[in-house]
Length: 68
Image (cartoon, rainbow, N blue to C red; front, side, top):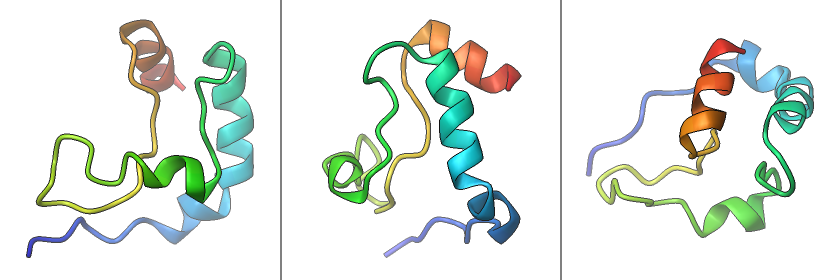
């Protein structure tokens, strides 16, 4: 089975800061942060890579997220 690259520890250490910033960009409940909520998307479209999602997925929020 293929695996995703290892995440950067420095980025993971900023998780709370990043989630808070994304919540100012993404409206409503568009940012899911808890593991149980993210588990449903573990293989979202890429069944060969089993990993939890890390970003929102609408056109407007993707642009704002990329700019962040």
